[in-house]
Image: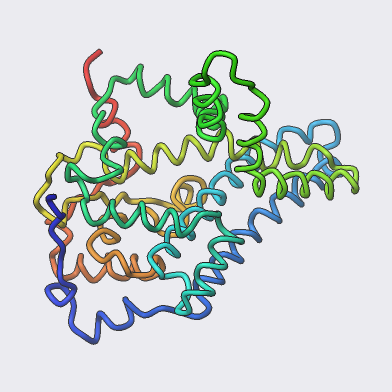
Length: 317
């Protein structure tokens, strides 16, 4: 197996520079999780209150709300990703509990999978290689993917794809109900938590809130920006890339991108692959230090998400 080449932080930073970059924090990661949920909660409150301000026109608030909430749903995934690297909190038990219950379930399962991605980044054994291998694609192909994302088709496939596959592969005469019940049991936590939210909001007269302000963002905007993130991070990078400074791409993100597309420093992906156990809040500082040392010119970077998407969809029809 071809293990991806690693970098040594000592080759880029002095001990005095590296120590604060690598340091875990007992409050910063928790503060980011709290920030993420606060943004989601305030967005919910704004939409629920909007009929008092906008009257019958209040449904127009659902579209920007879905984009903001979808961005924070991705943010929860990013923070769970940090936890998979043991970076969210110095106490691993706290780290994993917060990730599992306040970010996204399955942190230990994700950790085993994701660390393989880092070990074999852009090599044949990289489990994420399939996400970047198809590019470049045609503009029409990217357009179809965007339509599937924004219409919820991608979400249905991801959430219920296993059930669909089992139903399709069932033997002649095999009962359908046990398969469906088995998959519901497998997803019991997801069903239980979402049904609980529906029950609570319905009790206050807002039965529609979960559908409009959680499911809709998750099934649409979240899917789209997750695709954009995957493209920006590894698309158009050659398989078996030997240079560890070019296994991933850092993409410049302005305020709007950070709100809607690239939360919690996820755009600094080249730095993350170079120093995978560095907490996400240290990545911007590492980026600035590397730039000052002249290292940035050797790294794979892009001036913006639109640039990467244009290149990824640059194949002739």
